[in-house]
Image 1 (tube, helix red, strand yellow):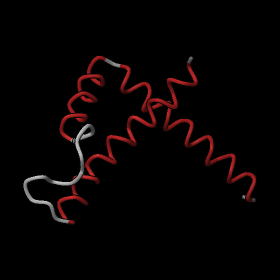
Image 2 (image 1 turned 180 degrees about the vertical axis):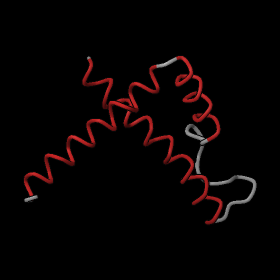
Image 3 (image 1 turned 45 degrees about the vertical axis):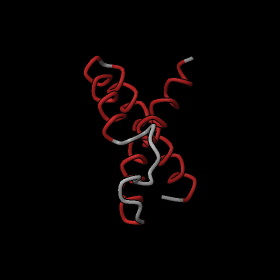
Image 4 (image 1 turned 90 degrees about the vertical axis):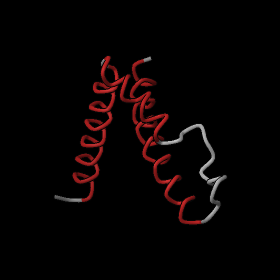
Length: 83
């Protein structure tokens, strides 16, 4: 497989992945899970722990937040294409 074929295959896989995120989180259960993840992952909170401000806790909090941001990013790309 040459570079161009690989690029096309990667784009197809990425599109299918985005479509899967969109299908999943459009369901009623998906919306409930998304709302729960928003709270659990601290999306609207600072990543710096106010009770124990240290680098490890900040990295941990930012990691949780980043997972949620990825999900939202995948959903929004799909929703924008549907608009």
